[in-house]
Amino acid sequence: MPLYEHVFMARQDLSPQQVEELTAKLTGVITEGGGKVTKSEYWGLKSLSYRINKNRKAHMTLLNVEAPSAALTEIERQERINEDVLRYLTIRVEELEEGPSAMMRKSDRDDRGDRGDRGDRGGFGRGDRDRERRPRRDDDAAAEIGGEE
View 1 (spheres, rainbow, N blue to C red):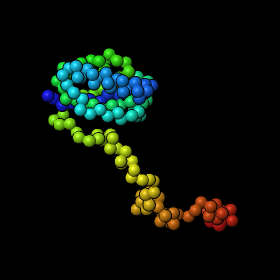
View 2 (view 1 turned 135 degrees about the vertical axis):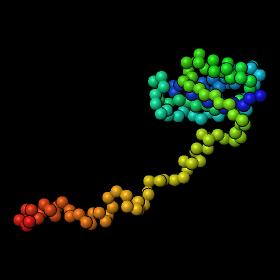
View 3 (view 1 turned 180 degrees about the vertical axis):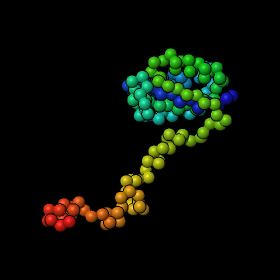
């Protein structure tokens, strides 16, 4: 049977429980169509790059599916009808990824620490040596007031 990764985005004003119910409904459609969901991951409420139907955020969920194409066609039809679903994407894959997806592993990268202190940038911008060459404006103003030219 073909393998698919299916991701859908639900409106931001839904509760996580409502998103779980929607996921269970879609999983039921797949099982009725003769397939099975091997993995379901709720990625949480994420910020969007641009507004979609007046939503700045969306609940995102990944489903790893092993099902005939007719079952996926029915899921996509259900999602087009449901106004809680903003967008969806189904991709056929050769094999399903074991373990957590890249979105779930992202939290591991966030633990790298603060990157705010970059140290010496090595000549970028106006460095200290540029400041040594130029006279300060206060010195120029004092020289003009004192009558020196």
